[in-house]
Each structure stands twice: as structure tokens, then as C-alpha cells.
Amino acid sequence: MKNIIAFAASNSKTSINKQLATYTANQVKDATVTVLDLNDFDLPVYGIDLENEIGIPDNAHQFLKHIKEADGIVISFAEHNGAYATVFKNLFDWMSRIDGKLWSDVPMFLMATSPGARGGATVLDIAKGRFPYMGGNIKAVFSLPSFNDNFSEDGIKDKELNDKLNESIVAFQEAL
Image 1 (spheres, helix red, strand yellow):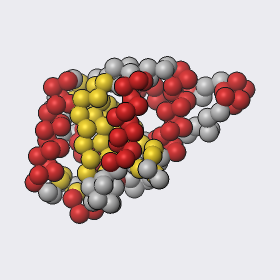
Image 2 (cartoon, one colour; image 1 turned 90 degrees about the vertical axis):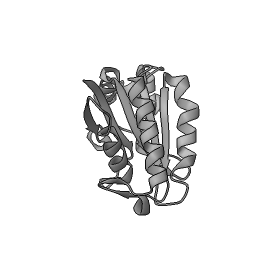
Image 3 (cartoon, helix red, strand yellow; image 1 turned 60 degrees about the horizontal axis):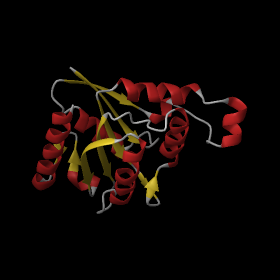
């Protein structure tokens, strides 16, 4: 059994990205899925002065521990003004102070969705470009446009999008 962690790069309590990440991770065969919630890893806003004063908070260490213990990571990004949600960027910054290669070459499935037609494509492109420099081993990528029209608790409604998701799941699963 492979250990998969899944999370939304968002702190919304009703995150559509959390729904997508959870659904997707649970489609991986022979895997145990742990869904993480960024709200459970509260951190002060990163700054070098604060780090020098208090050190690195335990929640950053705890989240990084989940990454290092995982066989695979599924992340779905919320897009805020064309970039990462602040809560994720802050966690990312804290963890990078512990380990610059924080993703530890663990196979990753990067995703994004939004209510709009671009499906978080801009933030997904940012992550695809940045993560390999930080130990990211990206094995699959998927963007779901128009979440409210294309997703239900049973999965992706649109056949073409569902086929793309399933192809991405297979690629991720083969990398585990």
C-alpha cells in the first residue's frame, strides 16, 4: 500500500480544490490517502526577522514530515490574483527554510480548479515551473475549468475532461 497525502493549497473551509484533490487521490489504486488541511498547520507570516527571533515553528516541521513520509503527493491549487493562495505560499516559505529541496523527489500530481474557464491554469504553471528546483518530481498535471459545471461528488461530468484526469491518475500511479 502506498501512502498518498492530498491537500488543497488553500485555507477555504469549503475549498473546491480540496474536493478535487481528495477525489483524485482516492482514485489511486492500492493507496492509503491522508487528506491534510492547511488550517491545521497555522503559521505566522514568514519573515527572516521572525525566523531569527522564534526559529521555525513546529507546524512547518510537521507538514514537512508528512511530505517526507509520503510515497506520493496530490496538490490542488487555489489561484489568488494569478498566484498561490497566501496561506500556501507562507507554508511553502517556512518549509523551504528547513529543506530547500522540500518536495524530496516524492512523485507529485499537481492540479488546479476554479469556477472560471481557465481552471487555475496560471498558478498551476507557476508551480510546474518552480517545484522542480525545490525537489519536485512532477508526474502528472491536470486543470479542471468551470468547477461548478464540471464536478460532482461522483467525479468529472465532462467525458473528455474525465478521460484526461484518468490518464493523469494512471501516470501518477505508475510513478509511485
